[in-house]
Amino acid sequence: MGSTAVPGLSAKDVIDVQLTVATLAQASGWLAALRRVGFRRGEDWQYDIFHPLPSDSPELRKLYLREPAGERRLHLHVRGAGRFNARYALLCRDYLRAHAPARQEYELLKQRAAQLFPTSIEGDLFLKEPVFHLLYQAAELWAEKVGWQLPQPE
Image (cartoon, rainbow, N blue to C red; front, side, top):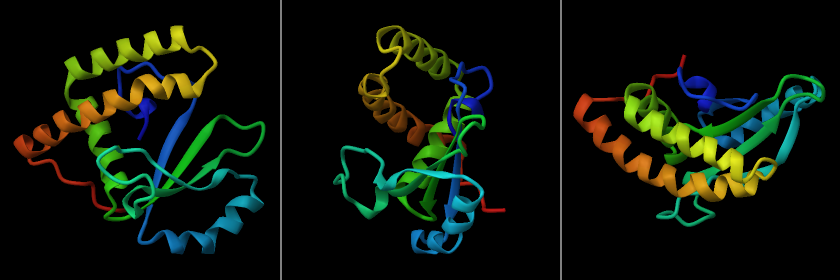
């Protein structure tokens, strides 16, 4: 769902994957199995950031895991089906796939963020967070125009 999922967009060597589950409570059943094969918690339950919603809104809650040590970097974002943050991530991904001008401008921002904050994820997010709020507004208009629907679970 991250930059590696958008053809033509430069990306760090990190694959961001969204796993959508019926409910986040369901995640506890298989969390132990993921830990046994080496997945690490990035942190315990986290919340995505989206200003119109309170920072502790259930619509933003997720579980975040990282790859086993020594493996290629993988960030697993587990979000609940029907929640705002699950839709938001996929909508923005699909909008950037479909809209070359937005993708190109976002890539320029990413390059500048990497120059300004080569080792700071906080600095990187400081620049990118408001841009994604703007991208989201454009993506919603695009989704309505083209009839975009949230992909159905497999």
